[in-house]
Image (spheres, rainbow, N blue to C red):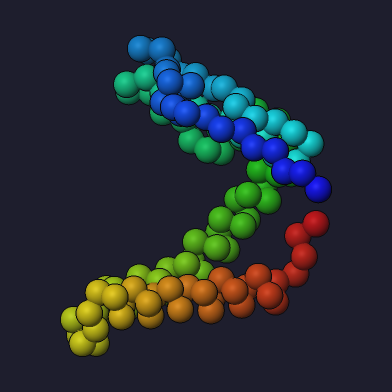
Length: 119
């Protein structure tokens, strides 16, 4: 099996947005992946949900993205607990970081392991 790669030397040059507007450019597409890069002029912004809707008009996928976000964001919050209370717990930066990674791995990994299938 051969693997092909797309190499982009300067991503910023690929996405030079207009001075007052938004640019959307597909850099790569195959039957499994579509890589789209967005560039925004100064003062321009657009949320991921709106971009997903305007690109696909697929409410089913947008709803799935929203549900997964509502589940995975709270599951990732334990990562911050050891860092937030490092001084009280007597932890240094690296040990608090490691403890946070462990907690987040346990919570997110548990969800991924025991969650009902989404398809």
